[in-house]
Amino acid sequence: MRVSIFALTALLGSAVALDKIVIKDNKFFNSVTGDEFFFKGLAYQPENGEPDPNNRDPLADTVGCKRDIESFKDLGINAIRVYQTDYTKNHDVCMAALEKAGIYVVLDVPAPSYAINRAYPEWTTDLFAKFRAKVDNFSVYKNVAAYVIGNEVTNDDKTTPAAAFVKAAARDIKAYLKKQNITTPVGYASNDEPSIRDQLAAHFVCSENNSENVDFYGMNLYNWCGDMTFETSGYEEFVKQYASYPVPVLLTEYGCNAQRPRKFPEVGSLYGSDMDTVFSGGFMYEYSEEANNYGLASVTYGKTGVEKTDDYDNFKKALAAVSPKGVKMSEYKQSSAKRPSCPSVTDTWHVAPKILPPTPSSASCQCISSSFSCAIKGNVTDSDAGKAGDLIGNVCKDVSCSEIQTNTAKGEYGHYAFCDVSVRASYAVNAYYEDKKQCKADGFDTQTAKPSSKADSCADKTTDINTPSNNNGRVPTVDDSELEDLESGSSSGHRSSSGSSLGTSAAGSVSMLALASTQVAVVFAAAMLI
Ligand SMILES: *[C@@H]1O[C@H](CO)[C@@H](O)[C@H](O)[C@H]1NC(C)=O
Ligand SMILES: *[C@@H]1O[C@H](CO)[C@@H](O)[C@H](O)[C@H]1NC(C)=O
Ligand SMILES: *[C@@H]1O[C@H](CO)[C@@H](O)[C@H](O)[C@H]1NC(C)=O
Ligand SMILES: *[C@@H]1O[C@H](CO)[C@@H](O)[C@H](O)[C@H]1NC(C)=O
View: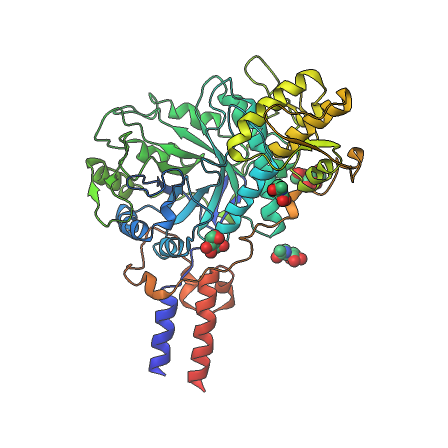
């Protein structure tokens, strides 16, 4: 008996799950305790010594993440925001170690090699596939608190068209997660560009159909520098502006470094009565010291050493001094919620209200491809994508290509504009062929073919919402020994208080990892009792 109880406790001790964070109206809540949840977060993207700088991933560096988790616990944070990760790598150990330490992860979905490009924005079958692969690779971890669909994509009044595609991406990833009964919120992180601030904030939440809106809105704010105050920094104005905003707002980045060491006076306001009724906390930028001088500590990929800057203790002290109480979920109802109307097109805002780019459909792209009588031979490689873009531009001066073109200001989206560049280039050369009877494409070989489908049957095929990625459905496995060197039991996280009992109410909030251990433990205990 003694042995079995001991074994049981040991197993559960390392497998206690973090409670799920949910949204009600404009606030985050702990779904188990019903307490309001505030992100006491830190931006986390150490770059020094990364073996593959074009493909960064701190959650795949098990030495690095375990090293920094000790700092996270010491600092008293409860969440990190991670910008770049690689869905072809394994994250089981770091994600389990973070969960054990009580740390949630807010994960950016794009990566440098697959993101909506603010200069040439599009939302394609290829991008959607990569975004699905990313969320599939991370949705198995119960401490993923939220996804960020884009960071400062539209960042001035020249790049507003990108906002149309980013909102379409949020809509489609939300629908994709919903299909799998995953309720992790999807939001956007905006820079604070005064000329388009109001339009952007309205754009992302203005749809009547809530499935098209982001679930939360983040602002990257650096206005509070040095000895400024709540009033002089302008933060007071933000609180007024967002008081009736229909979804939660948080600071997805903050921490002006005009004066170092930083003392973080804004932390008191963010988690105190100045702001805690409107903002759900935020993420201080950033953990690691990089060339831009925002770090709390210098660290190197794969190495254990941590060299703190003066900011480290200042941030720790500032956080230790706050304890936002918030409201209870059961008692809360936003009294002043007001859905803004979608911004109208102006000289500086180039997105038509209400009409979003369509959901990518590989079936439509395959269908239209097999309707071509003349096409590019083989697929356009990544390195030839620019050349293919030029080809499309040139050919489409002579023939009509509206089906592969978009105009966000007019709300016009061709049926095949979401197809990858190979299909679009072939669409253009086929249009040229039909018009001029010449099958040619500058810089590419072409081939003629006997069409096997009719173009006018290709527009409304099923979308890729139902197409899982290769990562879908896997259950992570972490050997407890991999987490042995980590002390458990940080007080910063919001753990399920019922985690140490085996009641069914606890089971609802345990992670798959915990569930696996629990089942083992129950079987083991039952055997010992007999
Ligand atoms: C994420 O993808 C990598 C590479 O395919 C794989 O090793 C890992 O197991 C995946 N993780 C999950 C949870 O699917
Ligand atoms: C999602 O939940 C619904 C309703 O409970 C269920 O019918 C469906 O099978 C679930 N889908 C998945 C992928 O788990
Ligand atoms: C709302 O939008 C979602 C996602 O595009 C769509 O699946 C759903 O049918 C829409 N609902 C209504 C009532 O239009
Ligand atoms: C071109 O790409 C498509 C989709 O990725 C793939 O199915 C097809 O096999 C490729 N064709 C060639 C010739 O490589």
